[in-house]
Amino acid sequence: MGVTVPVFFAYLAYSKELIGPKGKVALDDLRKHKIAVVTGIANPKPLISYLQDASLGFEHLDYPDHHHFTSKDLEKIQAYPLVLTTEKDYVRLSGKVENLHAIGVKHVILDKGKEQLTTLLNAYLRPPSQSLN
Image (cartoon, rainbow, N blue to C red):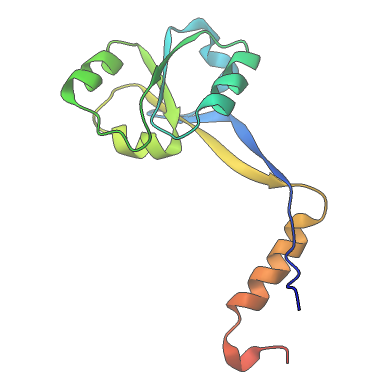
């Protein structure tokens, strides 16, 4: 007998507000700055497309996923007056790069998938004594 596996459709949604050293900053406010976008993720293409669609001018400093930033890398990154990166790399670069900003990302599940997924996860995570048998 086969097992039914639910399929959910989702997409990535990037925030229009950035987290920075002085709190939140609107993405639109960065248009007047010379920006470096630093990525050390497996697939930076969706982020880069999003930033290009937002008419943001920037230089993309593309590093491999889980890249260990060397002092030479940090020196190159630090040469920019404003640095934008992912939340993952923000944690890794925080304290090493000044004027560092992070852009948030979330998964948006289409249709009623969020409710269905929440129900499945709650049932799975429920302690055995509370199972619905």
